[in-house]
View 1 (cartoon, rainbow, N blue to C red):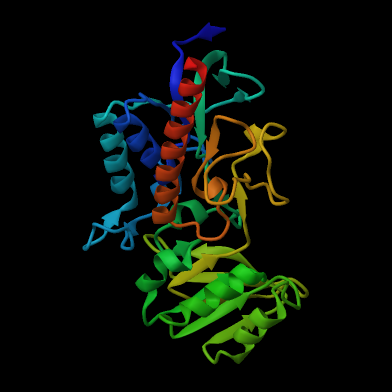
View 2: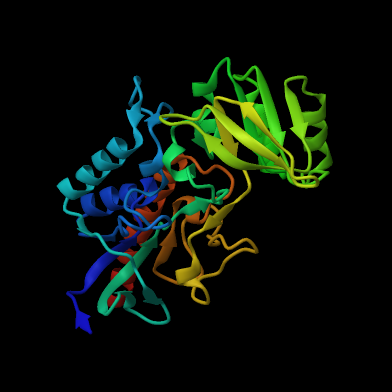
Length: 321
């Protein structure tokens, strides 16, 4: 087992939250080590979910839009410019039970006074063969992010909960028709959300149905929908498919170490990024199941770095007395 020089701050994860935290921590002369994830990992890849996104038009400072991977590379370069160090590996084990905090990458042990967790969350997907290939090319998991690109088109939404109904309702601002595809004969969404969908003339519902195939070479052109009761199939010509069947935070690594809510998101103290463990902070989608936007993740990354810096200063001042 290899040990490495002690760090003041370790950042686990490198999406907008982690990289913003790295920028702020590096500018505060905390020399953060960013364990950014593995390129082959679908849930912990460097750059996070924006690496699967094409055009980003709602991130401030880019009036003409920017490609997701380019935005993340710029953030990474900015953090590196101020002294952040990057390890392109996946954290495999942690121990936050005592100071210093310990993080392992396979057999290599890293220690730090403070740890910022920004491992994000991943959208649950349908598991279809061409799904990954068409993400950003007609297939999306975020109506707020991508709805604008589907102006004047017919699109479909998969799901039956509040998120799916909310996505569908939002998309009617741009689409000519939105078809909600749900595998059951009734929604799980709240009554008020259901009524909004039923009252919207642009929304149609396909009950007892599931998407079984995606059609399209360079971009999505149609979807195959299968009736779950009789097995019949029908092809729907749609320009976009929004998958809204839920999200899963990447928190398995922290089970038993950090407090989580019933859905697995890390719990932070109100108005801060502090977790239940002193010196451990959380930011981004790993603790945010409400907004899930690049800009809100970046903002919480700033909070985490400032919280960590102030905690370290207080700890040092207390120890010096």
